[in-house]
Image (tube, rainbow, N blue to C red; front, side, top):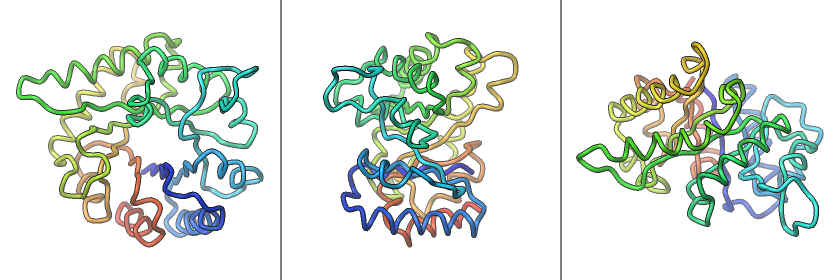
Length: 247
């Protein structure tokens, strides 16, 4: 199981960031879990350089620019130079601030060009009885992946995060049987976009009110390959409980 800890802007102090990172490294050693940390931009620069642990680092977002006179931007190359190896792209909180499907596709291309593994975030705002949300998921996947070369598409990790489940409680997460159906649908769309049998090897994660109480159940029969965890990842005890229940 791959577990990506998206610290968002919950962590603003370097002291707390170092303690969280140390706890995650110890957790990875003890459980042999694949853990990726996504701290806020300034803290990545303090934590990622010189990292030799099994824990990897991710950018929470990357700029669409490749550099130059772009004040405040953080490019894929800048992250890669720090030792960052993953990048979240298209998170709902970035889409809410203006990231269009076209911009998401552009960011994916920049991440891949600089050796970062992109984690493409997709998810519907609400579910309807007619299944229109499935068309929405198909469009998010297709618009993001189609501009890429076929081989590049196979390097993208998909993180399914329904907006109606983000930032709430375990009771608000998607039921495991519904998640299993969605994972099958995502893989069906990926099979149309990826070469050969690549879609069967593509990683699909889930995010949206993942807690220690529901992580094992969500992972059991859904077909997911891991989780993108938000607020539960910034409390060392809670995060440890969550990861240990996946082992």
